[in-house]
Length: 151
Image 1 (tube, rainbow, N blue to C red):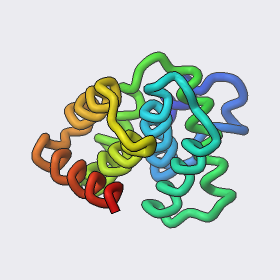
Image 2 (cartoon, rainbow, N blue to C red; image 1 turned 180 degrees about the vertical axis):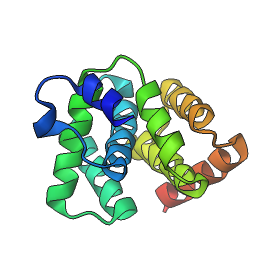
Image 3 (tube, rainbow, N blue to C red; image 1 turned 90 degrees about the vertical axis):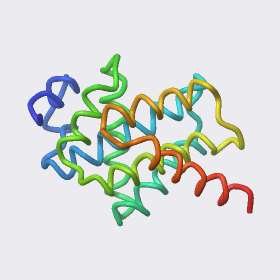
């Protein structure tokens, strides 16, 4: 899988390629959140900051580590025309409960602007199917995110 991601990234792999399956998973997770952020064809600093905040909260990373992962994810996303590389990495390397948490982070990205577009909801449903998170769990974490947003 690391070789596929390195190939996907292209260019100077030594400077941007993940060095472990844990880092590869973090990059894949960030790339999926980036896809959610780009669903409205914009990617602003606030969305980038939200991705960073979610990564810090989920993976307990420091600021430098997060910036590295986000940069790698941006490069990987830029060189990819589909999410299958990222979902496969998550599916193969992340336990079920953590995959559910990744879906929760995607819902948080979708609700960042106060409403969820049809494209965002569709994207999250596709990701759920590709990483084998069932609809019940996705619905449960969506409700949790909705409740947090309404406070």
